Image (cartoon, rainbow, N blue to C red):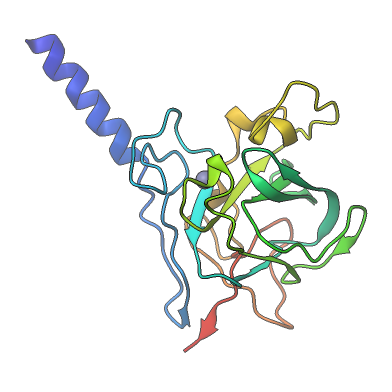
Length: 207
Ligand SMILES: [Zn+2]
């Protein structure tokens, strides 16, 4: 009995540690994260098979998606489970990590492989394809995931594994916001952001 209680406490503690007490900016209106990094609950409300390796944000059809940092497009691909996906090499983080970012489950894509991208640039919109690809689970949303190792040899791989070699050890995006850990940071034109940091992948509305 004691053992069971102990396991229960550990499970409870682990779950708790995966809610990040995020700070959303007060002077902006923005769509919040619906399924967070390491969450065990999927975007469809069901239990995930594995803890979430990215963040999910729901949006309407035509929702604009913007680049989280300057970078170069490594790949645009309609993956059989993930649907249309953009992979951008965003260089390095301020703590020296490589930032290979997946923008998954999008609709229309506005960028091409090899293209240089600026932070805040419109790279895609959400589409009406959330029932066409199994990994979108019938809920229109962006899945953003940060790995460090891009996969060049795709043979036999699908889902995040098609794009990343280290997708199971993805980086926690909340460590890299420009305004500091857990401080979600909106992109603003003509603003200087911290070197090696990221900004939110949806545009924010200034209040
Ligand atoms: Zn996701």
